[in-house]
Length: 173
Image (cartoon, rainbow, N blue to C red; front, side):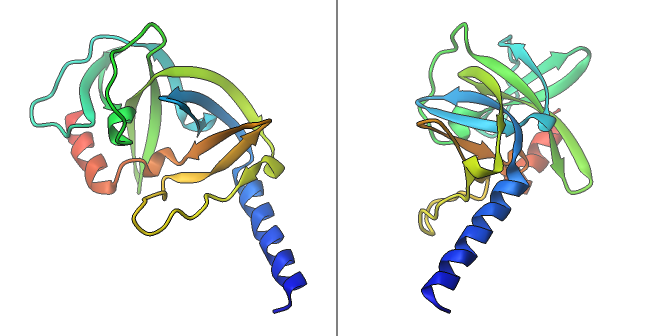
């Protein structure tokens, strides 16, 4: 393959990734980084509330909450991503998301540091997730959104937890 053909092939792949991922994302902060979740996966955003601990739950599961009569599991995203735990603040909140596991849908909450905004990210502003080597798991990052000088990691919320983790969580809620 010629160098020109190789460059054209990479540009085509880049455009395909951007076209596939372009759309509206709810952006939020965890630590120093900003992330985005497809807005269609978000059911609602609620203020932090008392979370009831569940014995023998995985470490990243803070517990469960009662959301209008339905008990849903709540995952601490900082813990899941290997970040240090911090005390909740007035900006800490829970994003209630719908996760698809095969044919099953699971409603769960994810605790985040701060909600930012809803952004419409165009195809030309989305790049493929760079390769970090075999030892770093990135399959839950769909792509990287570029907004001005900022970068936002676009999460595939369905893949943030493994199927085994989701299976154990579905038994909690």
